[in-house]
Length: 223
Image (cartoon, rainbow, N blue to C red):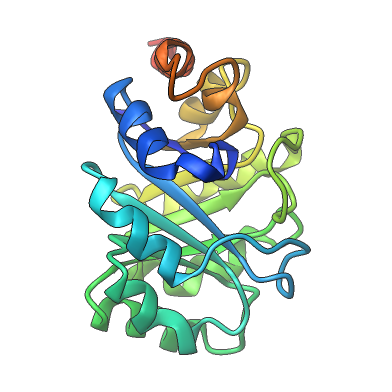
């Protein structure tokens, strides 16, 4: 089964509650929250207070992607804000084992992410500590970027190593590449602009059309 996780980075920031309700009603499986600090990545987005504010509006699952460094001082705050999954980057600090253990101890499901330029081998030592691996297929920091094809072999390698884990793709996902991603082994597709384009809170029907197009492409995998 393929999970579609719209990123609210592409939503209307002035109407997050309504946007979340609309996109969930139109078929979203999870809500993906891209947290950026202006240090680890060249952009600033949301903090724990935003996550706490939108939590009551999320009926599915809050998937919080921490593109921040350091991570550890903020784990408890994001857990208290209601994150279901907390994903930290393997590049964000020297003690990723400790970070992932702290995430689980805080009551969240741990995830580990890796950037396009990071070898997949970097996360192999911690696969027993996580529920999810997020493969970045754009350089993190901004939405709307083009998919980096050379990241695709990482997905197949991760699936071979860890058949039981969620493998999430974040960056440049759309109907045009969803099939290749799922064939490689991905089961969670994060999509921002490709879900929210053409729609609004007043006219959410395009959200559903976009989600169905991604899902249809992803599930048309050849036998």
